[in-house]
Amino acid sequence: MRLNYHHLHYFWAVAKDGNLTRTAAHLHVSQSALSAQIRSLEDDLGQALFERTGRSLQLTEAGRLALTYAETIFAAGNELAALMKGGEFRKRQTVRIGAVATLSRNFQENFVRPLLQMDDIEIVLQSGALSDLLTRLSVHGIDLVLSNRRVHRDATHPWQSHRIARQPVSLVGKPRRSRRAFIFPVDLGSNPLLLPSMESEIRAGFDQLCEQHRVSYRILAEVDDMAMLRLLARDTGATALVPTVVVQDELKSGALVEYCVVPQLFEDFYAITVKRHFQSPILRTLLRRREDDVLSGVSVPL
Image (tube, rainbow, N blue to C red; front, side, top):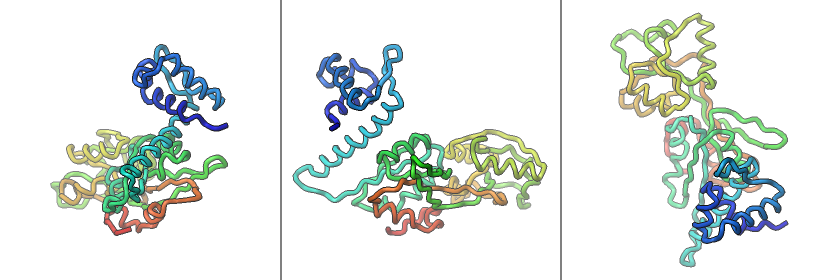
């Protein structure tokens, strides 16, 4: 079977808009003709791509997968047209990186910083849930996923999890009035805490330490997004449990200080790839960077 890309484009347009009538008007075709084209594509693929909910169309699981492929196909076509525009071929490489939405923005910026200095590289950054990013990775929609969780390979998905950095987790907050050093875990009760949510491995490790030491604490907020945790640490008087990369700018400026490093508590950062016959040399070089350079954001030429 040879895929009909004209039908695929119609499917892609409807999937992006979510409304058959509006898409038909935009494409200057009748609604019945557009429906027929999509049904033809569904017949060719042997899968229903849409299901109707009231007056709206919702993608099925097969439809979501087909949309991921279509995005990649049409993005590549647009890239080809842009490269060839004016009859000139410009050697410019696109690197597509996905990152778990709750991951530290500072860490993401540090990871891609060397690419920002390269004129022949275009960076596409996408965020989302880990499961969605892995789906895009599996169909070449993105080249690499940044996560703070290791993903284990299985018979269906040959994931490769590269640990690119490990950082101790600290308690940080505004400068303390007391000159006495913060003592863990004795001083945990002196201030309300800003903690990652219960789903976080950092939180699980922290709670286990507190149970071992038989200490309790007061919670001001539980936050699953590191960017929000950073803002609350900066704008409240609470103590935050974070890897220092999350608040690196505030630590440098003195707006926040590190009270202590929590013993035996770390956050690991992973770059998840899938085995390819042809892997980008740029990605290989990124993955070989020294851990300290990644965490500090040092822009060592690739």
